[in-house]
Image (cartoon, rainbow, N blue to C red; front, side):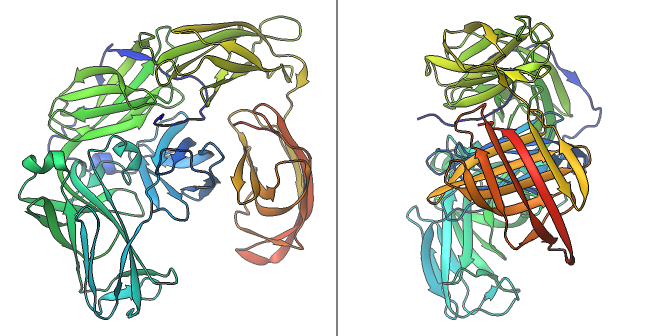
Length: 586
């Protein structure tokens, strides 16, 4: 089973050879730092893949970054343009009924940022009475002990005396997929507000709800007792006492609060509220940055990178669309830098460090020397049979979708890392942005380490995209390009939801509607336009779809018109009409 199935843009990576390193900070962070937790805002695009508990694409997951939201499509993929991120700690959340709310924190970079999140099943561990309290025991020995008459309704703080459903799940910090499952990351703020990295010995997720689903919490001046199993391979090295940490839901970072005592193969401690809890010791930390490139200097993007301490603790991230990655790692200890393939196996390992200060490793060259790595390349030709000077190839390889821009001589290239030799062919569609033309999909046999597709025609069908709309008498026109628009369809119940998003300099529009996957007329479900981000539709109006894209590279085409009110100010009545033609991206 593949570890992840990605729907990504541009180029990817191959096998690493160490090149150089350069330091960009002279500040010593050997005892922890508050500098690495200072706000460092940046606006960039965020995309990613959400997986269910079995590692399969999770459809219909709500993704939130700041004030912006998105929904994952049939491949578990999402994309948010112009997201407000942070270089030191960006937060993205993922929510789907039946699962714990997921958090992911990462160091944002200037390119298109990539995350992968695996959802944790929200399992009912048992029920207790609010008046008498009680203890719930999980199958692996984890326990949650609730106080009598010590549980409140989260909404108003009133004492709750009814039945309490306890949802809980253990997280093994030594699990192979821990970097996808872990709430947030291994970044944390200790009790002195210093940014540190963690080494976990055991984690536990706990949520309390009434029988009707109302959120519950521990009352002030009360505590609950947690028994957290220590990961089996860490029991011999587990200290007798250890700090407890919880996920701050506003930042996605772990925060230090309280401690636990080792009793047998468990840690036992008291907590004042419920969230994700973690038994860890902290490491002083520094930020390490690097840029992955292939042998000809092109960026290697969305590569899975792990930097782990020889003595415990690690940092993990994905390179962005420029090949950049940055993250927090333990300071003053030897480190191992690894690049992983889609199955989670290392295709390269390199000893680095130790580092006592923030360090940039600079450009790191890579080459195709692993059976998991293949580069797909070719040349796009326009309608005059000349090289395309501005455009891109859409490459579909082993369920991965990549958009590779051409150089001024029509050359395109994208490097994929999959499970060894898994795919025998790829599909390529050429797009000419200058003449707004695209060709037909070409199937090319895959050969390792380089697949040469030769000349690919980018001629025959109009590739023009647009969203034109009139809002309250003012015309707006968006001519989307690859990085400013996004359309995807995902299954929902007995049909599909189509979500269309486009951003311009001073205008933006986002709408979706339920449909049966074919051309037709459907009621508009949600509309966000320009400054109106939470609209209330009046006299519900329809979307008329004249063409429904079935394959990647085809187009959704349609129109809609109607009236709405902004839910933040219900007095004005707004009028909108819209026509659109937007490419299906995955």
